[in-house]
Image 1 (cartoon, rainbow, N blue to C red):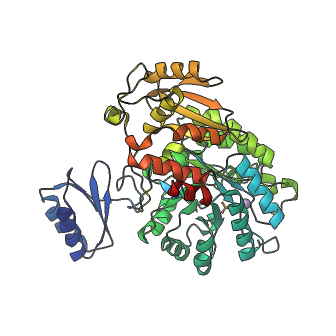
Image 2: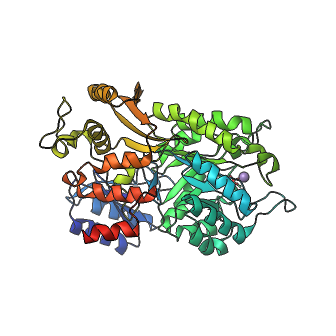
Image 3: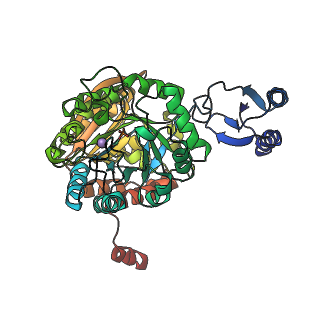
Length: 501
Ligand code: PEP
Ligand code: MN
């Protein structure tokens, strides 16, 4: 059952409900959303006790509603939590505005191979490096992966280019060791219902990439996610990787309707795997585009420096160059559905809390109190250069991005069409900038403004001249963090000089 409290419920009231649930034999879990607080009851109790308890709790004055959850999964359901879950992978978030791209070889084969792959995918804007060290191969006579040695190589290569890693763990006995080196633990399709393994990764704090079993229904997939969640790990990313059908032309049938269904039924982020989903290199890019258009939160794709010589899954791996092409093809589709492809400054600006949730970017309606924008582009009490002003507005409404198109750094701002005058104004003043749109998505019309071709360092210099502290104490700190992330932070020497002056 789920207990929904009335708006503004006090801590003691939350406590009281938890106590009642626990006395009846349930475990309780509290979720404080933006709009409402809900308390979930986990466990099995006698039907009669349950009905009585529901009545008692339902009659408390601060309780809005008590819902009996009939679905076989609860904590991962939309009833439990309406807001989408954002899964943090280092300083990126899966499930937010930014699409997460995980790329790399099926298997780690050698130091040279994984370094080359890491460099290649990072250069084209991947967020996470993938690579299998423990491989679930259908035949025991094929390459089985390099195991722990491969995992160490993957870690080193990823560190060299500053990316987090995702890698499969197959055996509950390996979970601890793999979790020590990996940023994301992948549960493969063949293990989706390995309940011991699910419970084990549920006891870690690492995000879990849960692939859909190749013969699993959507409901079974969500119950597998529930296994991880009830152990205390809510950081789950669902991955549709293709299912078995009668079709043999493709290796699997990538079920894009499952992406839509999973997002309707659950608050968890969902990504797609067009490599395993099709088994064919020539279908990866079109299916990646379709997946993002269908609402997926990202992609995991196999990329190999030399697919023809790959020890596993070469036929469904992109070359590095093709991966670059995929990223460029994705950009307009991402834009059209209101998502961004390259690392988002605004998301990094809003601190991730320990439970993996973020403080939400300010709503546009909250803007005037934070940042009084006038239509002539002036602000009250503060003079900003034109360029800075545009960036600041973008950041404050949570829709500004700094990243790279794979070749050069860029800043993009997306704003509601009602701000069109601001864009026109920026367009006139920032040489080389471009305006795209208007786009229509989710009942909103917006434009995207973009400038490329400056060095990142210059872009940061511009950003730093904005007196962030006057808007929010978080902003300068986050900007500094971001500079560090891009390797542009102050050196120890510079910090010392600063401390002395
Ligand atoms: C993989 O990602 O290389 C893999 C083995 O995936 P799946 O479990 O989806 O087959
Ligand atoms: Mn593979």
